[in-house]
Image (cartoon, rainbow, N blue to C red; front, side, top):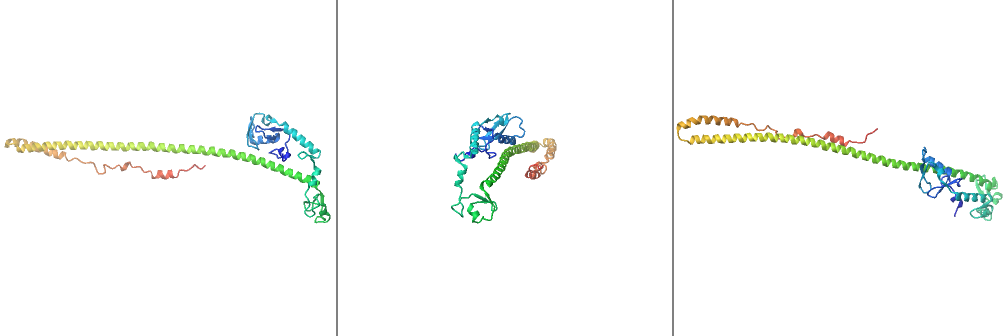
Length: 315
């Protein structure tokens, strides 16, 4: 391991695991307290069980009514943490098995005095330095303290900063999950509106087709009526024409027959019938514009303008 402490740090609080340590189904570990905070942030009502995502691998963890208390404890990790802390209390680095004070021998050297190691801290300039710089160098008029005195305070500040970052990370993770939920809701809402829009336009298509059929039926009916009238009128013309031809033939025969008396007896009657036939043949043709269907024309201009301006309802 490159860093045991890093391996024993919680991915939420970024601090070393705090007992009890729970192991998730994805085999990653969390402090039970951190796991509980994460579970509460994603399940504010906690009516019966719930879910949350592992902060390390995003695996979806499903909990029963016991919540995080139903997760199994990782006793192995807890034992390793105990051993690690015991080694620290003895002043031994548990990773390298080296006394911490001996590691100071590897402290960086001063840039001004290459033979001197940095072993004090200049409070005035807020920078580590060496003893020679305090005696002869640029920090001779400055206030200095041992490194360990400043080390503890700054380490506490860094730890506090880490805790702030951990809290911020947790907030960001919650915001990311909320954003993902929002994205899913946007997709569902968009699909719903697409379906509703399709249904609305399908209804318009159906209404237009129905109305078109009704108007076409009216045109067909008008055509049938006009054609029936023309057929009746044509039949009358044919009857008058046939009668006229018959009278014409009779008149021609009467003129060709011999005998004055016989001609005079039939001519008067035939002449009267012919005059009546001529008067009857004065049939009136269809009035002007009879063939026009312009009165059945549909003006869709206003409807076209309305259709062009169809838009979503603004609340």
